[in-house]
Length: 567
Image 1 (tube, rainbow, N blue to C red):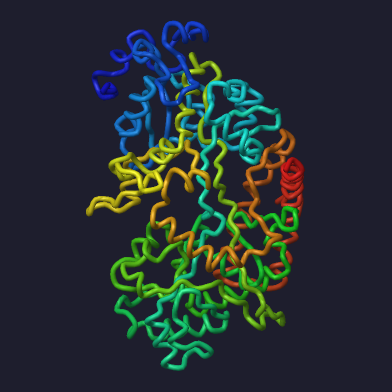
Image 2 (image 1 turned 90 degrees about the vertical axis):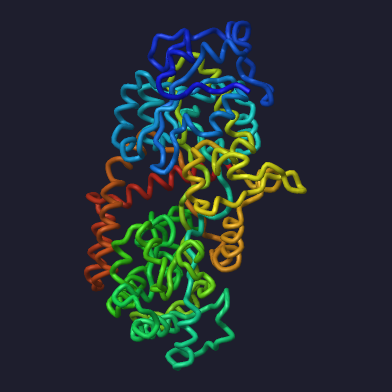
């Protein structure tokens, strides 16, 4: 078995005796005929190497990529060794921290000397327009699909993916990441401490429920939940010994998961961090719903009473998870699974969405029971870009095409076979997740050993090739029972959309201001309260030409109209 020379002083100069180490190095770009004749280039059979031994020595690529702080250098990852052994394509990875990448991305896009491609590129539609369509710095990948049989097959089978990755000029400038589990649309579940709730029932602090009701799927009204949280707050010293750290109800403000937006479901609002959904085929902003003012004032009443702690609006995701461990201090919380948050998940039940209050500002919401509908995409469209002047680009595209093979995708996303997956397949021939070492969590193993990024893990792949990890199955089971069924049929998340240059100019002008305006004002109103007059002034300013929500809504509606008409 070959051993990939990637480390230290051995360096690129030794491994690539003729090729040089990266983009911009005056390397020869061989013709297709030369690649075939001299270097054995082939792309049609994914079970065979892409290059011969000579190609392994003389052709190579330099890839720039951010990585998680916990991850190994990508040059040292087992899956990268496997890919080299299977393909004979040498890749030298240049890893930087996620924070450094955020600062350097624009610089690298403007001057990519020494770089052939960017992995974890995270390009926005505006950046693709600038560097792909306008400046023509990025490779139009669609012109090379014949060298990518796996990706080409995906596009042929999935018109929805093709639409989302194709720019308005008809070209594809970035490769996508696809991980479809049906999880991201519903990022919250409500967990309630059943032991403490039993005490509230015994103390007659809450009516309408009995001890026998304290099981997964419990439906509570807003009034019952308020009574339970009030009991928690008033009896914190007897319930737990954590003192001021006790939190009746907690979440992570505006986080991608475990956020507060299921609370707005009590008012029939399918809110999310963007405050934007598709409703009846139209782009709709949730904050313009007539019930939103009532929702803010009611949730603020829980904040004023200390039922929602102020820390919920300030804590990071990491702090939320760390503080949930040890002595129990969360009466109720939003997250995907209790097992990740607390040490004693058996003490918590998973509730159905809360039913709305009977009287808020004279309005009855007791028949309202719905949840957050997130726009977190299961198809990430800007994951990898290749620069147009990269030599031997056909070889690099054939190499990245292997990432879309099911077993490679699984290892890219979770870690290598033998460590993240069992060596032996199950009775159905599927890869099965392996228990992590005793001193490591599943997340830690994954972050250290999987590069993430390019993959294709669709429903078909889960059915035929890879068995979902137990935690994902648990999430899906709970979401299907206690969340997804409460989303109205006429409400859907906003998909990845493609914009024209004029539309992107409008978004560039307004979108950041709108995001800041909504984030700052909604946080202030939820924490401190808001009058009806202040709310009307807020909406008037939001729709004004200065903030520009009306203009942005028109842009999204036009882009969504094009997307929907192509279905």
